[in-house]
Length: 189
Image (cartoon, rainbow, N blue to C red; front, side, top):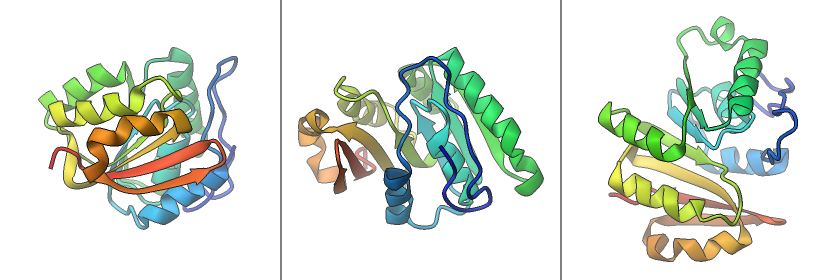
């Protein structure tokens, strides 16, 4: 797996050993970032971060702040190792990097209480387990997405039926094999 564009273009990143992590494919990752365009100076949240792949790509493309959330110690250790290998603060001196070992639900509560707001939320949850609907409901209960912010969720085909009540917030949906990328405006606005 590698970073595909920006400051760290072509640099390899690791995935957590011995896990069932399904990293976002380069084709899908490239499509996601091409759709959203420039993210210079954005504050980015990478949920279900796994290897940190999406957040590292955002950082490479100019995000000012990146926060990774995962409940797995192996994933968090891998994200830390990937950050250390890239040494982003030597290339991007004022970037802010945060790594959170916690569930998505508890993280939302924490960010909301601390009034931490993100411009872009990237989520690559386990497919077909109800996470798509859960993330959107969390955003309504704990609005941590900028009013003009974007939520991007990578999911499986069976998860598509979970977006019915959030159809008004859906901006775009693209399919890449078994993977679907749904892009939403802030559902709480």
